[in-house]
Image 1 (spheres, helix red, strand yellow):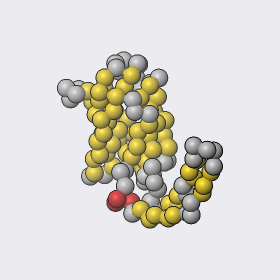
Image 2 (cartoon, helix red, strand yellow):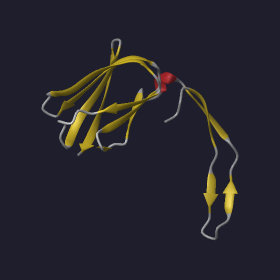
Image 3 (cartoon, helix red, strand yellow):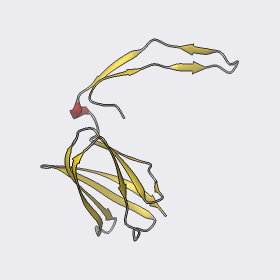
Image 4 (tube, one colour):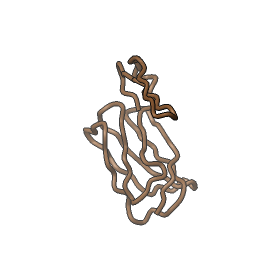
Length: 116
């Protein structure tokens, strides 16, 4: 997940004969409007623990709904840092869900698979 601003990358190639080649460092600048506002990891979510990476710190409202639109979790995330661990309720069953993150007037959604 790139961060807003300058990001630096370097490619390392490992050949079949064991030879390693390093390529020059490349830089890319990402504006925050170009980036997806959040990343859920792992997806599928296992062991009831959801990791949420945010591109911008702030106050958010997180909700998880099943595919029938029933809300199974709602949680405010106040003063959120870029990395957050969220423990899912024990009653969430294996399946596909819609995770929605709201900040101000903007809402972002992503399908997640929860595996129990």
